[in-house]
Length: 199
Picture: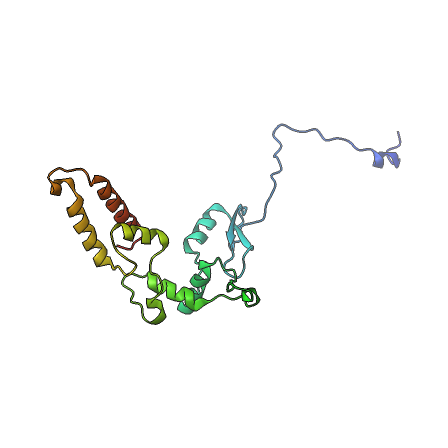
């Protein structure tokens, strides 16, 4: 047998698999934390203006990163107000209604800023905002149940509620239950207004 024959170079031999041989584990990207050599299994967002980009961390470092993550970091009050105004419409442009409304797509930030101000408890209205409706349709229905109009204040709603409950409660009418259904409607309307933080 000639051991220097070129035929020996072409022969391939299968290696036997040993029972205790370590299995190769698929390695993913390493943890993005400096100095960490663990596998980066968990995605974490890189932050504002870098949507769709992620760090990959190991379990310990992703917890640490999430505990300190702040999407609004570095934004001043004006920038936050603009962001919140745009959030009302899902950060999409809007346009005025009418035949030429679509030609001027815009986000009217003053309207949203005014709406936010009006939502705060006790906010007073002046000028054109005084004529604007203060409540939505469901709140107006609840106010009509309490015999109030759209100019009702928090204190007038509470006072009217107490007055109507005293008037329609069976105990105040000698046990007469004829206005019990009306009392239920009054209580339901008042609870709705409370749930909307209007009372």
